Image (cartoon, rainbow, N blue to C red; front, top):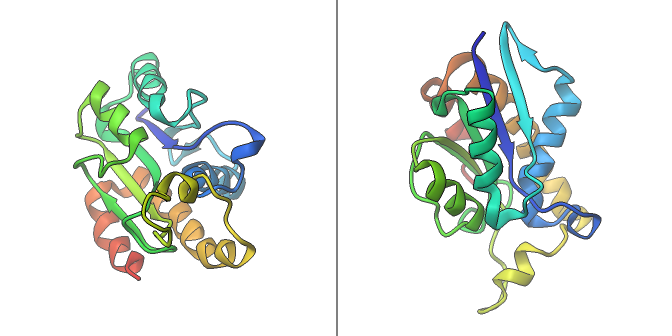
Length: 178
């Protein structure tokens, strides 16, 4: 049975709930709630919300890839991205960490050859205000604006597992532009 590891990046603890930096957790929660499954058409799907804090996410990712003997091509990491407007998203087969500490740590430990879904959180912060922005909570209005992208991200995860990265990128990336 083919195995897949779907990772949502975020920070554990109630103080981080609904913060922009926890968008990966929010997508994973939505997927778990929508599908309530551990397999898709004979493929085993592992969902991971690392409890190591963002900057050490690679430890958990590497551990589960090795423990379950999951091919790195079957890894999808979901993260927030300040370079994309709120509600936009971009799916990539590989690439740089784009300055994201969680992706950076994963890259240090396993390289950059893994799929990632970047969820736009916007960048409406003053110079020097990035940390406060990413650790800030979404407003109700922002949550409403983000929700359609979270719903699409659930479909992207299913497509990644069933159809692969290339078909999924072709089908969904055009929908992620804002």
